[in-house]
Image 1 (tube, rainbow, N blue to C red):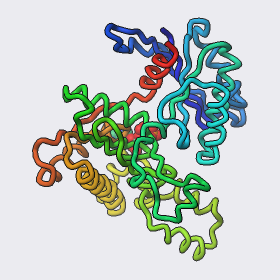
Image 2: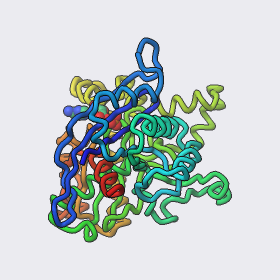
Image 3: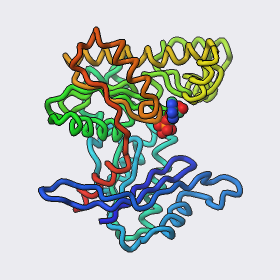
Image 4: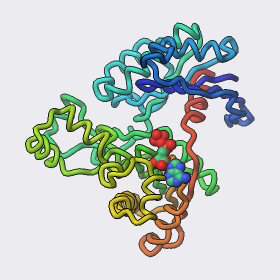
Length: 360
Ligand code: ADP
């Protein structure tokens, strides 16, 4: 069955077409990815694609549209409402719209993509898969912040966690690789790309994750600094006379590996400079690794043991030295039973499988 997966960002639209089949008993077997691509610079001058409607129209012209049986969308924020993927109906659209307040840069493009698919793939059922859904199983003591409780009630300020589809995919794959049921495993999944997050997955359910109300919290990332004393924000705003959008820009785009090294947000550049003796690139790398170690220790403690640490994402998948370094350094603390694995993520495939399950 042909399933199209769509991932709309603010200025891009990624798509991938899968052929999904069922092998008895009920196991969904991915056959293959038949086509994939990205429409970039949506809305840009001379881009030839003025909005997401036009992007989806272009995609529909490239694909065997009449044979597609379902469309799965990646949606960043589902608020507290969505704990799993859902078939998109009117009320779902409204809820995604409401959650736009929490993800103003991410949810509106997804909404546009969904509406455009309704127009250019008429009658084909659509499914929303939320980045936040997997982490909805976290207990309140992990997701409530230590600020007046009324702000949780009023604005839904809490830890949501992101990269959920990726964490879920690699946790499932780890259980398959270890030949043990997920329901019996204590796993830490580390998605290390431009954005980085780690999740403690206890018997298949996340019980904590490093990203929080937004993707700013937790690990050191390409351009985001992760954990930070919030007093730094008000201090800097006062001293440097910064507006909210300026401080936002610093925290989201100018910090992390880039901010510390002054070299690049890209780990490959950091490694090259570090090897040439650049001290700040070396410092950025050490902070990156240290933060991961610290969270492995914390999650090991809250799960009361650890069967496996799984690395994925651009850095996690392509820098085996990181896995080797961490497994060597943590051997004493964790014991020899904890496995360190590299598993390439495939969020699109999981979205295709979720879509298949929901529409059949
Ligand atoms: P995104 O979060 O945008 O999807 P990716 O998962 O592609 O990003 O990860 C991008 C990061 O992966 C960059 O920091 C890049 O330097 C890093 N990366 C890619 N290949 C390698 C490699 N061979 N060694 C180290 N880092 C790598």
